[in-house]
Image (cartoon, rainbow, N blue to C red; front, side, top):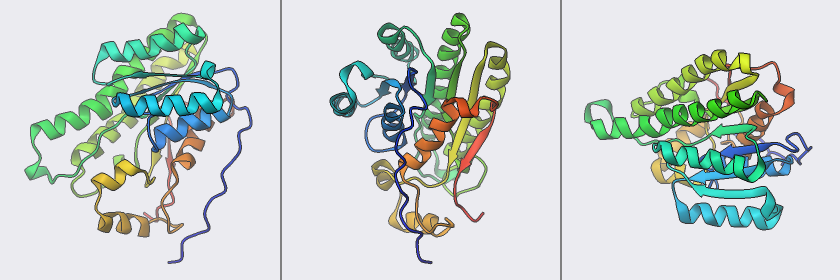
Length: 263
């Protein structure tokens, strides 16, 4: 099929003006990096974390140069480490006096058939993707509940949490867990005015995906998209902006599919 025309980049409209946001795994050119840029374009101040210090510094420096050093801070953060998670959220409060938004973007993939998958492969993917989301959500909720000022948490799930794909049992289980965590945590957080939702992308192209996926599989997945193309990372970030902002004020516990798949 002929791919649909490329999308038009949407300019900022000040939807997050004055908000302070923490975004995990936000270095580089993936969904986290696109979300960091979109949040800044919408008027937010951001603190970004990533498990890769050099790449994080490069991303934070570039964004600070473009959007102002007062609006951007970065701190290395491995979401499997509780102390590093706490330090990342503490930095947001120290720099800006509050934490309004958390975006749980950190995740780890890989491909292995179940009968060949090691305990280490299974555990590592779940510890970053699901347990990391749990640790960050728990830490943010404790702060948001204590202030009484409400807040928003947006988790990055995946359509693979609903749909089967060979070699992805660990990743699919982790992302389905993120969806369930989102629903349950949202019920507990509602009385404090905190909303928790998730996005569920199908296929967003970024350099890391190219490294861990074969060209044949990427071509097959792209064929399944109604638009005949993959999503740009900023198209996923646009939906994260929506969920983080006031237009989504009555949404909590929801997982929004950001997909053009036939299935």
